[in-house]
Length: 148
Image 1 (spheres, rainbow, N blue to C red):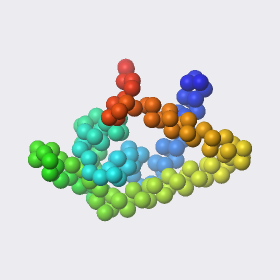
Image 2: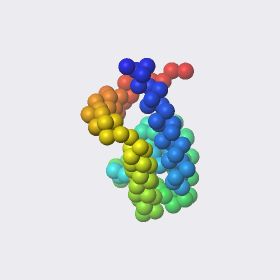
Image 3: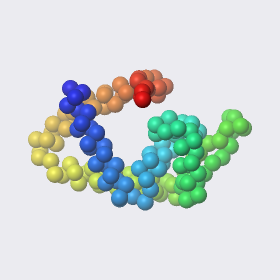
């Protein structure tokens, strides 16, 4: 099953990222940071883990987003040595735009499918949700690490 599913999921992901990158005014990686901050403030290390990037890369990305007025840093009230990153009003507005655009792009692709294919996809959603949740252990730690 993995040999059949992997290339399809990879192709969908690559196509989705390419189309999204041309449709919104931020990179896909920056959009992921916006999504990661939507529940509330987070430490840069949490943003790095959530996006599969290094701490220094997340710091650079947050710096660019801060310069663009999308996020702001503030002291962590629970740990004065630590900094939290949160969305600004502009960041929240852009997140809403990105969310709408993502939904529109997916809807447009779904409209190309037959009723039978849509029904099959609907039946597969619970299994895909289980697959996604199996990707992480409690606490968000990955099951497997990348080697290379």
